[in-house]
Length: 280
Length: 248
Image 1 (cartoon, one colour):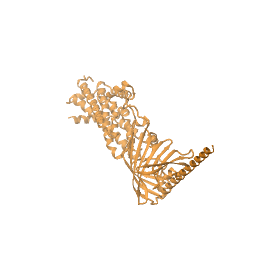
Image 2: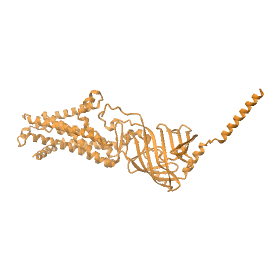
Image 3: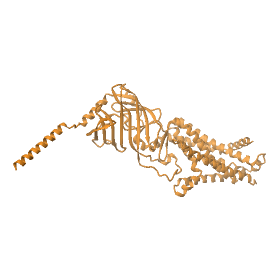
Image 4: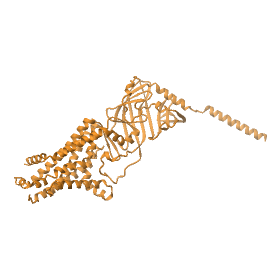
């Protein structure tokens, strides 16, 4: 029963032109970044590895598709949530704005099925956006730069990963990124259940993300205490997949916390929607 | 009074004679002769190609072990081929004594010592002129084979590095390194945050590690092919990033 509902919701999502803004934006952004890296990337890489070059000679191609894709994935926390909220914030509030809530709920389906199908459709959109990001960044990266060893420059270490040891990390990293973005989707979906206009959920979700990121970035004691409770703190935990050895315990912890956020946010949304007095 | 003066003269004469005898029998070695012997011994090797296995041990640097093929041609041409990305220590990569002794220098013989059971003589080299990056180099030379067993060199701005060599005889006549242990100090990376996209202070309490650390690189050489008359154009390719010795 839920499958046709999800299909209907996906049809509704992909019929709106705004849905494609995210795909176009990501595609354009990736092309711009990769082109810029083609001209300036080597300089940046030389600058980052300048200390190492005093002692070592480098042989091989470090400026490659893997490095560019890694850098693009780093931008996930700030840019892609906005693209997700454009759709997720509209999932419930859009029905209220269009005045289609009552028609929708006269169908022989429960309210839970309605909210669940919308939630699934929103997450499918989120997943497709992350898959698209992976395809274009790795695909264009491969065409423009080819693949090679991946250099990961952390705060106090440099890791060079064998090219044969990288692709699986990217697959898991994109899966993890999709999970992180699902939290954003769930948050926007939750805000969407509270209001009757899609603008509110978009602004509210982005505000939460921006505030959380700023709190995470400012290094003072009180914020350090709060930080573990902010989901934004775990969205970039996919970076742990590019360490050697991979800290599995930390990744599992981050996955559990993010899943917890999704479950709680959806649970609250489902309760709100079930008890909602539909007047429009 | 006369007896006393005579005693003093005799004492002086004995002292002078003793000094002369000591001077005659002491083992003062000429460092230039030692170094020239090393240079000459190395000139029998016109060129070679060798497989290199690279193992890097630096605290903040995690690099998988790698392989490369190294080509060398006198006096100091180097070409490196690697299917994968490879990091190789800039200094001593060609382990050519000619590269070390290329410029004008003053050599001082320091004495003899033993390294890994091999008797070596220690020679210090101070470059003459201000153009050289080298401040001071110390060589431990096995005089029986005219081989450099160890090099300690202070350079600006990279600091001091040490290279220890283990040699094997190839084709029953060429003493070439089978293992090179390169030890050096290297500064931790200071990383700009922009490119890495470091949005959050990941662990505020953890103090950023700073300062130089000791690094070790182990190069294992195998499958030497010596004096095969490598063509010059092999070394004429585009310069590999960061290696000034690449194509001289």
